[in-house]
Length: 153
Image 1: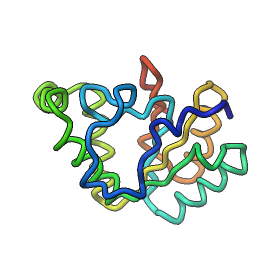
Image 2: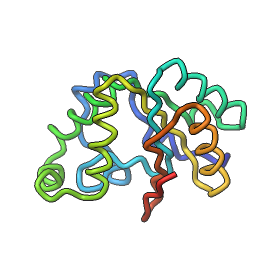
Image 3: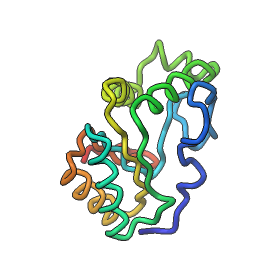
Image 4: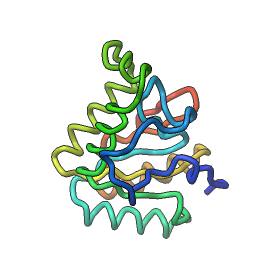
């Protein structure tokens, strides 16, 4: 995998998600979480999500470049960002963007208790490999968030 910049926007899973506020400008789009150069995928079963993470690591993904977010944490974190997101977040609520619509789909899955796996992947081979591995572990709602384009996997 490529040299990581994931640490700059890695989900703060050790923090209270209800207290999260706006994130740095390069990780938001109109006040909405934007996981730059990451693949996001939903996996229904948390144990299967953990197996997917191990398979990703076995394929060369570094520990710091992959996270499993429990559904309840993810949903509360998004709500916290929405509450504290400032003017841009308020505008995004009344002017839905494609990113906002995708986030709603992740929220619906998270609120059902499904896990969200986040994998840092900048180059196309890494994105494709992450997609194959996640799909093999039941991953769906898979997208890669590039700087200018979000790609369905």
